[in-house]
Structure formats: C-alpha cells, structure tokens
Length: 87
Image (cartoon, rainbow, N blue to C red; front, side):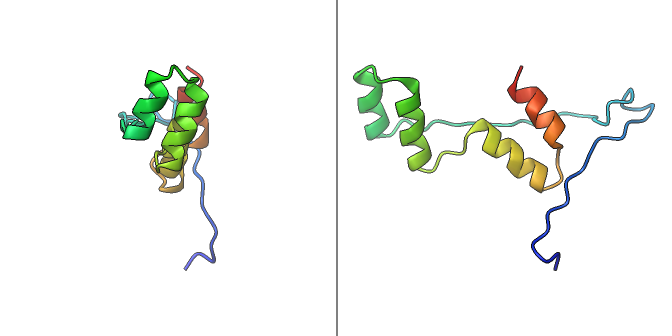
C-alpha cells in the first residue's frame, strides 16, 4: 500500500490546455435531499446554516467535501477546487 499517504497533484500545463494544467470539465456537487426534518426547518424559515447542519447530519456532502474527495482521487487539484468554490 501507500502507508496511508495521499498524493496530491498540481496542474503543470501544456499547449493543449493553454498552460492551465486543466482540460475538460468535471462537476463538483452538493445535493440537498428534502427530508421531512429539512422540510420542517424550511417551513419554519430557519437559517440556511441550520438547514445545512441538518443535511450534513443526514449524510450530505458539502460542495467543498465533494471537491476534496475528487482531489484525493487524483481527478482535480486543491487549487482548482478552491478557485471554483470561491467563484
């Protein structure tokens, strides 16, 4: 194995990608499933932070978590995830 070590990659760049290190696109997702509990929070006009906490408690991955899972899988880089999340 890899002794529990994670390899992170950085985009190098070439003519084909216009020296960005990236070519093609992959989505980063956050999907909120409307459970009964979340529905109650929405109907009670609770703050989005309360709704997000409930969703995460129910197993939702946030946008940044999904991005970093793709970083760990070598699909993208930390730089690209941070750029997309701050757009």
